[in-house]
Amino acid sequence: MKFATLTETETAGKTVLLRVDFNSPIDPASNIILDDKRFREHAPTVQALSDAKCVVLTHQSRPGKKDFTTLEAHAARLERLIGRPVTYIDDIFGRCARGAVEEMEPGDVLMLENVRFSAEENLKMSGEDALGTHLVRNLATMADIYVNDAFGTAHRSQPTIVGLPRAMPAVAGLLMEKEIATLSRVFSGGPRPVTFILGGTKVDDSLDVAANVLSGGIADRVIAVGVVANVFFKAQGIRIGAPSEDLLSTLGYLSEVEKAKDILAKYGDRVILPETVAIRNGDSRDECPVTAIPDLPVLDCGLSSIGPLTDIIRESGTVVLNGPAGVFEDPLFATGTNEILRAASAAEFSVVGGGHTAAVIESMGIDQKFSHISTGGGACIEFLTGKTLPAIEALGESKARFW
Image 1 (tube, rainbow, N blue to C red):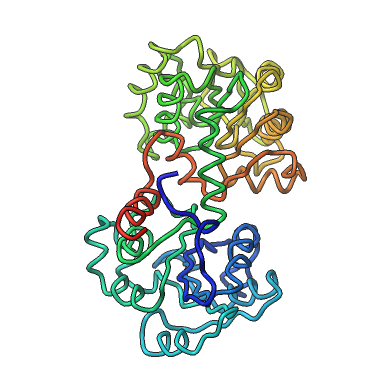
Image 2 (image 1 turned 180 degrees about the vertical axis):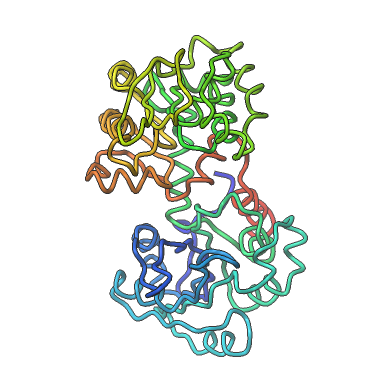
């Protein structure tokens, strides 16, 4: 790896800024954290810093959202998980924060306030511009080492992600290292055949992933489901019905049809699509061939298509899955997503791109069957497009400058 890691770094007695991603579902009325999966994923890195003064930097939501709140509840949740006191302070880099850091002893854990309470953290900027922010300049003087464990925000160009590594010695945390190593195995070393399953609504990113893995010979085939499949249908000249057409327009993805056409022209024999779909007809689920979609919402793969798709998945050595096959929140239209997930869980090497799909897997009780469930939906899919994520680039810069 082109960056330094926590496993090769001496932290005993040092003050460490640990950037994590504790952004979690919260009940806005009670401020209760509804899912602590990300806390559990980051806990090993916090524990690995038990001989250091650990200053936790994280965020919750963003300005304007109902769940944009302080981190008092986050500190309490982390404290319960690691079995050690976690002090919360409602300051980021002011006098109170500095005083609290100065008073720390090795083994102490301190959580600073939501870093997105600083306006600068909500701006997208280059690493060099981030170096000049008040946020980075002040935080960098408060510690000896910066540890980035926040893979979930690795695709963001924000000051604590791209600025701090350029201002001080920085390393990747245990979760960050694990995410990068596991996802890199998809590109080389995963057992073949390799099947990518791309669904959900992030059409632009999914098409970029498809183009990257097909052109590079990384994937033997790509299965498209969900809204991604609708774009491929449209690229084939198939009428997808007014509701699906309107959805593509609303999401701004009609322009992606040309990209889908190009993929089909080059790799059409390796792109697998459902031959039937499920539509909502009043309160019922109806099925139809993709060549005869009426003006009703398309919400899942058709039952007759699920078998052939899952057969392909079960024959795969490596399966990479990002996004559901339909509106899985509605039991009527959850079948495609559930059956594809069950088939994917049986692969020798299976990777899931986080987000809503990860929540479905946990609710089904099959999370332990997957080789890896990423903590970063957006970061994961950008990594799979072959792009260098800003956080990884910044860690590389830090290694060149300071190590």
